[in-house]
View: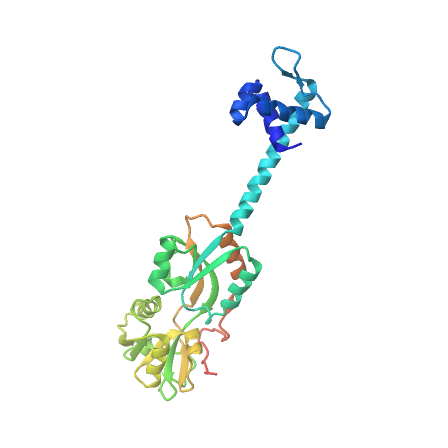
Length: 308
C-alpha cells in the first residue's frame, strides 16, 4: 500500500468519478484505475462495484474510506512535523552583543549552547550600543545582549544574565580612598572621568548627579582602559562598571562602590511584539540557566574593592 494509491482511492470517492478524480490528480484515468486495482489486490478486498454503469463503493470500500482518511491525515501531520525539523536544522540565530562577554563570563555559556544545539548556526556580532539597538529594531538581530538601562522596557522583553554596579576609581593616595564606599554627593566638585558620552553608562552616571541636584564636573570621557590610565595619573575620579575595573585593574588604584546608585543589569533583550523563534527560545533558556553575580558582596555601604 502506498500513499499514492490512497490518494487515488480518496479522490475517486470524493469526486464520485474515476475520470474527474484523475483530472484532479493530474494523471490519466488509466493510471488511477491501475493504482486502485493494485490497492484492492494488496488488501484482498473489492473496494468498488464495477458491475453497474458507474462504479460505486462496496461495503468494504465504505469502511476503508474512513481508514484511508485517517491514514492520510496522520501522514500529513508527520510531513508537517518533519518540515519543522528541517527548518530547525537550517536555522541561523543572529545575536548582537556589547563587547562585554568576557567581563560577565558569558562566553562559556554561549559555547555550551552551541554544543547542545549543533543544528543551529549561531551568528554572534559585537557592536556598540546604538548599532546594537538599531539592529534589534530593524531585524538584523533576533536577540541582543545589552545593559538594561539602555532599553525601552515598554517595547523590549529583558531576561537578566548578570548583575554589576558602578564604582568610583581613585588613586590609592586620594583623600577618599580609605573609605569602604562613597556617595554621589561626596563626588560633587571632583573632576570626573566618564565613559564616552554616547554610552548608556555615561547617561547613567549623569543621571545619578542630576537626581540629587548636582551638576557634575566632567573632565574627560574615555574608554574603560584609557579612563583607568587617566585615573592613575591623577586626572580625576573615574566612574565605570565594577567588572570593567576588574578587567583593567591597577595596583595603584582603589575602587569604591557608590552607595546611592542602583545596580546595573546585563541580559538578553528582544522585541515584545515579535514571535520568538524556536532557536532564539532555546538560546534564552540555555544562557539564562545560571546568573552571574559580582564576587563582591553588595551591601548598603558597599565594600572596598581591592585589585588582585
